[in-house]
Every structure is written in structure tokens, then in C-alpha cells.
Image (cartoon, rainbow, N blue to C red):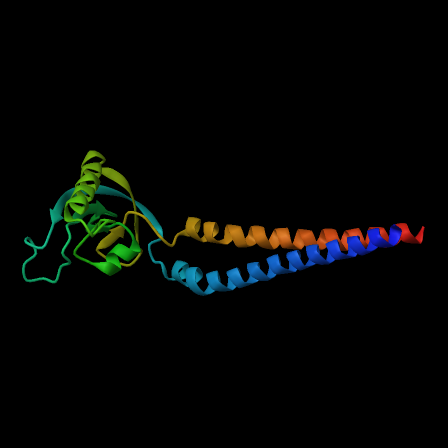
Length: 191
């Protein structure tokens, strides 16, 4: 009976040890992936200064209003604000600025024109209702654009690192408990 208990205990310890090692390896791989994707975006983000923006004007643009310029076939919102003592164009996120510099806000659903227009009108109404809000600007002198929301801010970085850290900690705790259990069982067997 004692031999069967010891064999079962060894098998269980081996499985627990493999689980702990697998969790640590997954955490290391995840840290590597985050370190090569999210961390460079966070470091390259120049939108670090939080400012107060005052709404100057908003208008909805679509392809008829922007003749002669390459504009996608969807309505978009154009927002001008006053930030850091100068006039600026407000963009929703860094990606919005990269996708289309003619639009401050690009609707989520681009398949249906009417739904996209309703989404843009809803966002415009929110801006008109709240004329003063926080935005993110850069410390560059000649920059004439600001962001409403940062995609690659410190909160996003911490949120991205939470689960790998949790996985690493759990894996290390499992390994430590297995090692402690082995040590205590050896000590108990020696008495």
C-alpha cells in the first residue's frame, strides 16, 4: 500500500511539475511576443502630454464634400479643437490618424452607409454636448494634431502584461510547491 501511494505521489508530482514548467514557458513566449509587438509601439508613441481640448467645430464629411481628394466611400467626422494654446485636428486614436488624415473619427461598421452615418452623427452629438474634454498631445513644436484616446498608453501596456505575469507567477508557485512537497516527504521518510 505504501509503495502504491509513493508511485501515485511521484506521478502526481511529475504532472504538476510539467504543468508549472509549461506555464512558465508559455509566459516567457508571451513576454517575447509582447516585447516585439506592443512594447515598441508604446516606446514610439509621442502622444504623452495630457491636455485640455476645447471644441471649435465638427462636421461630417463624405465623398461629395471632398471632391478631388482620395477619400474612402464612408462618412467620417472632422473635429477641430484648441489644445495647448493652438488650433489642432483631433483624431480618435493613433490608428485613425494613420488610416485617413482627412477623418477625425472613422466608424466601426463600414459595410452599411446608413449605419456608419448614424454612428458618426452619434459621436458628433457627444462632442457637441461636451465641448471641453481631455486629449493627448505631443511635445513637438510643429504638430497640429491631438488624440482623443491613446491605444499604446501605459494602461494598455500594463493590461497586456497582466496575464503573462499571472501565468509566470502561477507556474513558479506550482514548481515551488512540488519542490517543497518533495523536500518534506524526504524529511518525513528519514524520521
